[in-house]
Each structure stands twice: as C-alpha cells, then as structure tokens.
Image: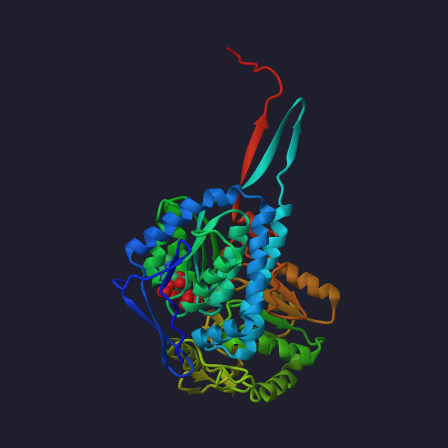
Length: 480
Ligand code: NDP
C-alpha cells in the first residue's frame, strides 16, 4: 500500500519539495508498512509558506465575506464527493477503522467548512450611539495564523482550524503531526480545487521544532494548537513572546458520572463510546467513569459483555470496530498505564493485553482517585471505573484534577443533571450522552485543558479582532 503525496509540502498553491529536510517515514499503524516518506520543512520552506500567506491575506480579507464563504462551502462539497478515498487515506495515516473515518473524520471537517462558510456573511460589528457622536466596531481578520495538529484526528483538526480562520479573512500555515502528515496535504489540494487563492492555506511538515519555528516568526498573528498540555505550555509561552493570539486545545482526564437512576444500557454504551472510539485516542474521552454504588455490579457486568464483543482487526475491513494505536510508542505508553494500574491494586475487569500494535478494550474497576490511572491522560482504550455514593462527593472528586476539558452526567433526574453540570469544571459537557461534538457547538477546555474555543459562533471571535471607530460629528473642543 502506497499513499505517497506528490510532495512533502503545499506552499503558495503548489506542491513543494525540499529533500534537504530530514526524512519522515509514514507508517500504516496496522502493519508497520512504510506508505509514504515526507521531508521536514527546511527554513526555506517555512519562510516561503509564511511569505505566501502574508502576501495573500490582505486581498482575501478585503473580499466580501459571502465570496469567501462560497469557496469554503465548495471545499465542503468536494470533501463529501471524495469521501471514500479520503476516509481510506485517513485510515492509512492513523490506523483508525474505516467504519469511523467514513463517518467521523473528514465528514466533520466538511461540516466545519460548510458551517463557517455559511455563517461568516452574517458577522457584523455594532453601532454605539454617543449623543451626537457615535462609534462603530468592525470585526477584522488577525492576519497569518499558524495551526499545529495532533495525530488523533489529523484531517478534522486541519478543517476545524482552517475553516473559521479562512472564513474571517485570515491565511493559515498548518503543520500536521509528524506521525500523520497526509490528510492536511489533501485538504490543501481540495482548497485549490474549490478556488481558494494561492497562499491562503499552506502545509509544512515537520517535528516539534518546525512548529516552534513557525510560532516565533514575527509575521504570525495567531497560533492554534491541538496537542498535549506540556506542548501547550511551550507553544503558549513562545506565542506570549510576540503577544500573539492563541487557541489551545489540550488534553483531559474527563469525568463521566452515572447516577443509579440512569438508563443502564445507554450509560454503558456512552461509557464505551467515551473510552473505546478511535481506540481511546480522543482528548475529550470520559476516562474517569464514576458509577453510583447501587448499580455498579450490573454496570460492570453489562460493560464486560459488550467490551468483549468489540471487533479488533484490519482497519480497512468494514466489520472492524477498533484498530491499532497510532504508534508503537503509544502502545508502550498505554501498556505502562495498564501495568501500573494492576500494580496499584485496580481490578482488571476485561482486556489488559496487547497484540502487536493493538490493545484490547480494557476496563479497570476499584480505581481510586489517587491512582495514576485516575490522574493522567492515557490516550488508549483503557477505562477506569470509580464507585461513588452521593452527588456532593462525586462532584468534588470529579473536579479534583488540573484538567477541565469535558464532563458528562447520566441521570433521569432533570434538575440534578443541570445542577451537576453547573458545578463541574469543564469546557464541554454532555447530559445523557457523550462525546458528540457537532460543529454548531463550541468545543474547548477549562483549567489546563486549554484556552479559547473551536467550533460554534464562538470560534469566529478567536480568529478575528475588534476595531473600534469613534466618529466625531461636530467641531473638536480642545482645552488649549
Ligand atoms: P503533542 O502535544 O506531542 O504534539 C502536538 C503538535 O505539536 C504536534 O504537531 C507536534 O509535532 C507539535 N509540537 C511539539 N512540540 C512543539 C513545540 N515546541 N512547538 C510547536 N509545536 C510543537 O501531541 P500529540 O500529537 O502526541 O497528540 C496527543 C495529545 O494531544 C494528547 O495529549 C491529547 O490529549 C491532545 N489532544 C487534544 C485535543 C483537544 O482538542 N483538546 C484533541 C486531540 C489531541 P510532532 O508531533 O510532529 O512532534
């Protein structure tokens, strides 16, 4: 299987190669086969990408919003037309099963392009009466934005960042994770095919150092990162040097709270979605599943039965429900958490084994708040189940973390659902469901999980700035 792109980078509307950059082999996680080789961006490539973005941005921002939106909506249509091939490429890049990539990854990217393309023409400023004088505000583009992506949803991340950025009149230079470099290049081609002027969406490959080079460049007005908290800290600090705008979508250790009046089947299904989709490599996963004591035995029984039926295997087989993890290093990391949980006294209910690049869907019960499994982000198919007695107790335990990305509550009691959500420290919450992230709903984290929001109308605020204009209608009354 070969998925070699035409070149490593996409700059100023063209594929670009510079083999002086260090090579990066792209592996298909399911087999370890090398499916492509790209080269890390050299200083010359980075400079060309930023220069073309800078040159193209002013004219783009001056266009009517409805024209910009039309191009984005055309890109959304092209993604849908090419959906099967794109999903296959995403599966090769990430190892995620086709069953997921056909419905979740690129489709959600297309939704973002359609949504922001449609929304942008309705963005307006305000008019502020000041007696005879008045003021008005304009929402202006920021300029050149840098997007840096993680490997778990590479194409969705590229779309979620570029759609609001381009809609508001910005240009973007995007650096995918070195582990999954292929999807963003396809997006660049799709934008060209949709009529986006050259230079507005550039893709440069590379490891963290390339991202770091982009973030500190004086031409850059904003940085949007999806990644881990340690990387977020570094990128945020580097952006602060130049007082740049940031959006940080970082990690989590989110609580999913299941009260004893919840619909058991739905709660079990949601807990599985919250831990096993994409083999658990989802930042918003509800990895601390708090279950009220009365239903805990029944919950664990039902969970084990369903978890053991999950079909692992060839990601390109439509019957496969769970693929491999993205890299061998990630498998080692996840298995380290599994072994650590056993050593700390958690009870293995099901799973716990690896087979090459695959990790079984794994459930631990009797997990306590101080165990490493309950405190650190695993990013693999490992669920921690914790028992609780009452509402006040579970809310305080759920909030006892430095993360604050997401949270969920299952209960039949409407009042309790809203009260508990009100008390949880998290940016993205669900009641009686989990992990649904439609583009219409803002997404992002509290506490260490991030700054800013993607998606929803809110995202437009993070890709624009307000210009205030005071209009004097009479003579200037100077005191001298
Ligand atoms: P990393 O934080 O390791 O990397 C994220 C991106 O930043 C990669 O493209 C990486 O490049 C790049 N990078 C690394 N160092 C620097 C630097 N100093 N300056 C600029 N860029 C840098 O995350 P992973 O790719 O390993 O993804 C997994 C993590 O992402 C998980 O912890 C998960 O929680 C989080 N995540 C958060 C999401 C959210 O929306 N909140 C969504 C998805 C994932 P390279 O990989 O090439 O080294």
